[in-house]
Length: 221
Ligand code: E4P
Image (tube, rainbow, N blue to C red; front, side, top):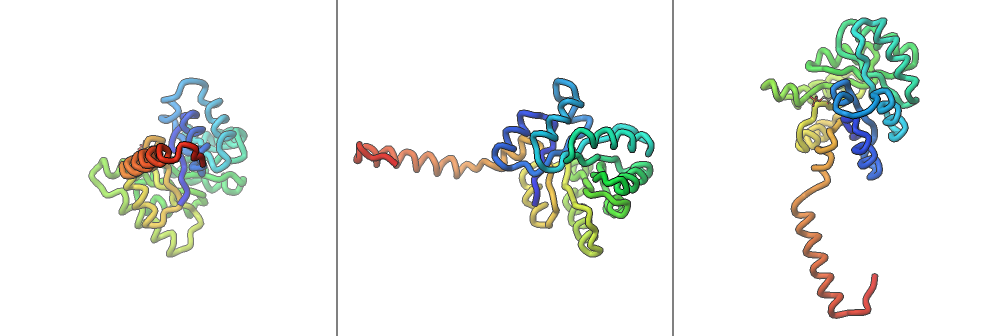
């Protein structure tokens, strides 16, 4: 399973990229609105920091606007994947962009049928938003199960990118189902590194080593 970071925060991207944990990045207008600085410049920087796919979202709503923006965004970096909303105009743009050799990530997917249509239109990634479904009283992870099963049944090449992830257990469940990618807010990736028994175990090892050093003053490793 690939791990993408769901953020436009350059510091967080650099931090986790330096640990080798970032296979790609997803952004959206809301995430960019939280950062200081020129959004276009931030997007360009992200494509340089990260080797893997970087999803940059269009804001136009007609097919024509989306196509114009997509071609401009693609110039930000070779690894740009254009994020297109799950609308009729969006699907038309996805088909055309595939013909133009531009990869797309269809966003705001809330049903298995929407995911199927996005895959058929030619999307490289489909992004079901599981946290927002959970918030609305539906089981977001069931949607991932359905989409993964349908895509396997028909060998669709589109990758299932689990979005709107809210906690580390979502990541475990997505992995068990066999989703291709999870995109994570940086704080969730941070939580995945930690376990209280790791901290407790390390403290005990270091304390015991202090005792060994007292008995062997010239010891070095
Ligand atoms: C996905 O690509 C979106 O950027 C994101 O996961 C949305 O998550 P949210 O529901 O936390 O806004």
